[in-house]
Amino acid sequence: MQTSEAANTACFLLCPRSSGINAQSLVVDAGMAINYFDDRIIAKVMEVPE
Image (cartoon, rainbow, N blue to C red):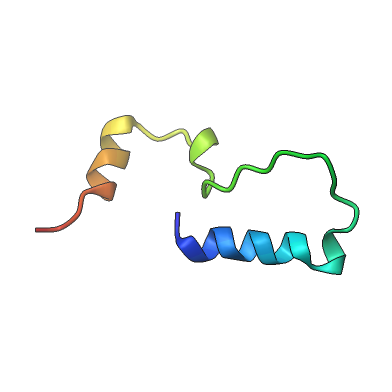
């Protein structure tokens, strides 16, 4: 997840268009909570190049 994704969510929640959302929990994790990938694949992709 990028910092900008969390910032975009915060901006949306502060704007008038989100007025219908209240008392909710939002998970901003780029879909990682529901991914169907193998943990080894995710670890490989997340490795920082040397």
